Amino acid sequence: MYEIIGSPTSRAFRVMWMLEELGEPYKVHKEQPRSEVVKALNPSGKIPILKDGDAVITDSTAIITYLADKHGVATFPAGTIERAKQDALTHCILDEIDAVLWTAARHTFILPEDKRVPAIKDPLKWEYAGNIDRLMDRLEGPYLMGETFTLADIILAHCGSWARSAGFPSDNARFAEYVKACRARPAFQKLSGK
Image 1 (cartoon, rainbow, N blue to C red):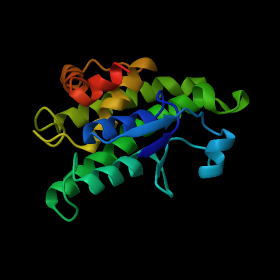
Image 2 (tube, rainbow, N blue to C red; image 1 turned 180 degrees about the horizontal axis):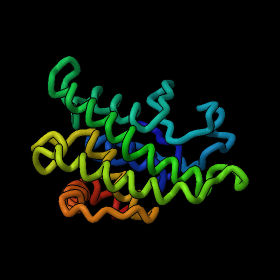
Image 3 (cartoon, one colour; image 1 turned 60 degrees about the horizontal axis):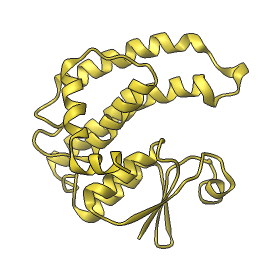
Image 4 (cartoon, rainbow, N blue to C red; image 1 turned 60 degrees about the vertical axis):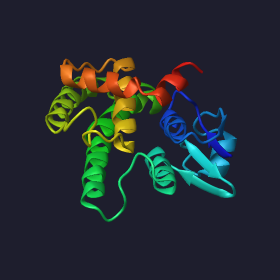
């Protein structure tokens, strides 16, 4: 059984969602960043962490990529053009959406108060909205890769929820429909009921 170390309100949710998509059993050990348990498994103190037997994997994107590849679900095969396109979208989301939200979070509650720059949030909100618009211009169907739901969709839909809770507006109607379609998936709905 897979074990997830982290908080379900963090990026660990992405791992939980992937495991629900796979139909694989898992256990969640609720831990906050930098706890002693977390630091023993990941010196950076970051969550989530996945344990697969004795193997320890860190970083939500690395974890869900590993799981998708291992089980052949929510991904295209390595070495295909489709996988290259999927990877390009994944990196775009990480660079232009996730990183913007992470920077805002750092300047809200993560960095020491004397290191925070609250004024950075307004330009980040502007950047986020523009990046969402450009990403939605690339949308090929109900999901980023057309009819196929992939791990990139898990990351972007999770970012959409994170952005809403962080007060990052997007008036992009296509993005709202996209997130709604992702959240309508049975695996997401099962998590919402937990």
